[in-house]
Image 1 (cartoon, rainbow over the protein chains, first blue to last red):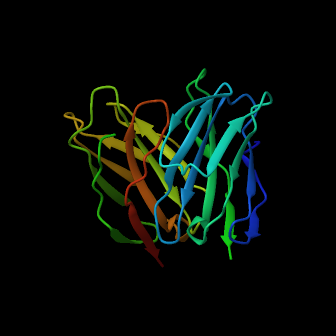
Image 2 (cartoon, rainbow over the protein chains, first blue to last red; image 1 turned 90 degrees about the vertical axis):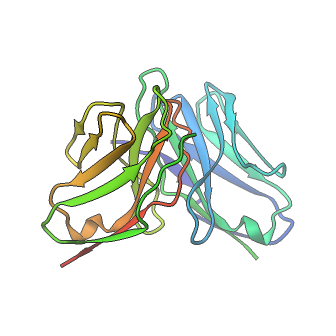
Length: 113
Length: 109
């Protein structure tokens, strides 16, 4: 079965650079969620989208933005990167319409140097 | 979101049942209990969820007390591949899952 696809899997950026992470949800899923997991920490909710509209917002820095496109894929844009942004970034998707549980991708490991 | 309390760690013998407790005394009436696990920096994996009835699927069973203030995840026959951090999460069905500190389960041969 198709799963949530995230790209790239690994990314290395320098401080003050920008990064774009992509998430392709499971087909027919209308909702995506972004999470950040720092070293040794638990996943923290950043932001979510339902039907291309932002549905909820967590502890997402102002330097980060995200959107969901017409094909339901989502991108997380991160600017002015800081060392502390180094983390695993997970995307999850679910279907609000059919009320399925959320499934996670394998994550993007971002390293800021 | 309601807060959950889980033991920080537990060991389990391979082939035996693993019973993972979770307290969620402030859960509200429309909130579900979800269980996810994370194996060494992989994406969290859905295990099971329930509202008030006990649930069972191919991975595990979920026992929820009648007052819904606590629950137990049961892995019927633990294997070495079940070693992971297990998260008990309560929330409404919008799936904005708030991860707390889970239980690190180590299955030993």
